Image (tube, rainbow, N blue to C red; front, side, top):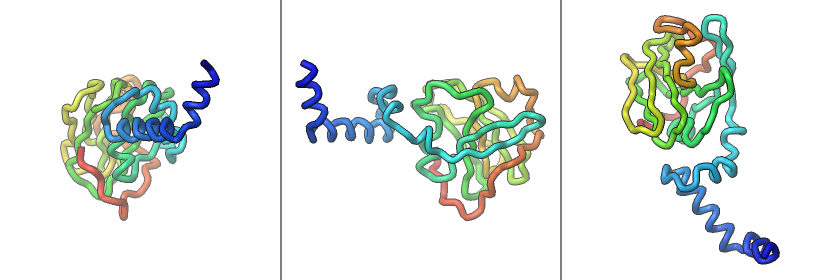
Amino acid sequence: MIRKFTLLMKSTYCARALAYVCVLAHMGVGLWPGLVMALDTNAQELKTVTLQIRNVKVKAELADTPVLQQRGLMFRQALKENHGMVFVFSKPELYCMWMKNTPLALSVAFIDAQGRIVNIEPMEPLTESSHCAQRPVPYALEMERDWFLKQGVKVGDFVQGLPRFENRPAAVSQ
């Protein structure tokens, strides 16, 4: 039986089928998310930046292209402590976020061009409800649900270490 399984895994048909499953999952079809995350190296390969809010340092994965912004934290099962994702958009606009295929409970802080937090919104897992900036912003920072509250971070606080947003590709609206 093991030999037959090994031969099957070596076959071109099996490799194509597995690639097809991965493509479907990246498109949001949600087939076997655990398998896809095991095969998906994006989480390990994303660039990171160190941000500081008040006295707390945050390691944030950088979502600075339309593809990375659309994918966001989809299919993630957990985040390390003080880790999140910062979305760097091409220009300040009224951006909205959603939680499609995202099993983690998250909060999002919308941040203006000066690094000031405009609003913070809690987001429910696996929903397609929109959570929007209250005014045009070039940044959004997603962290675990209630992280901002637990750290004492509130509207009006400044985020230091944000990358520049000029000359970025246009973001994919969600």
